[in-house]
Image 1 (cartoon, rainbow, N blue to C red):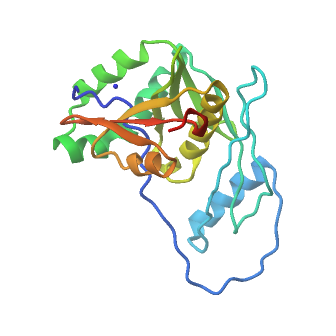
Image 2: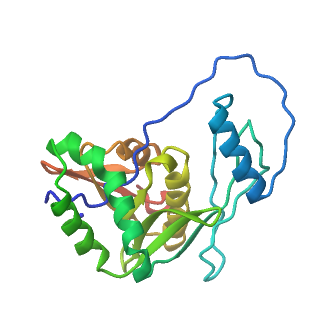
Length: 230
């Protein structure tokens, strides 16, 4: 998706949070986007509270590529925020390059022992020159990019990359769950590839993807709807 090109290296999902404190009842507070942004910034500056974010992507409706969220917005128990997609344009190139470099740096270093900016620029430009990319936005602010190809006999997740600060919060999982719904409607498999050191492999496996092949550098995975008998 066996070259050294970091094809579909995906998002890094390594952060987990555990709490052993006695559960406490807390009030549910509702905020608009501006209030929520200001609150989160203040909390992070003070260091007194870590806001946990849980995202859920709502289903597609016709040609509407926007994604909504379910549930209430809470400043403690989990903040539901809107994730949306829009077609990428040429003006998004430098943003996407930054996402690529920041999202894939640690994976490439872990697997190949170093990071060659010139080589990575070439990899990015070769991939980005192809059509079909979309920008992922959180509450209207770009946080990553992706490319999903609806092919005749399958759906191919060619690229999914998020800025590090947005990794591990469920955005990629929610996007993939939406793709899985599309695949189930068509009764076709989803196929993707990732570098062998990519921590996103665990996310794919948790979602039910099975490994179908492996090279010295990459792992190929597949998910099939239950209706296919897989």
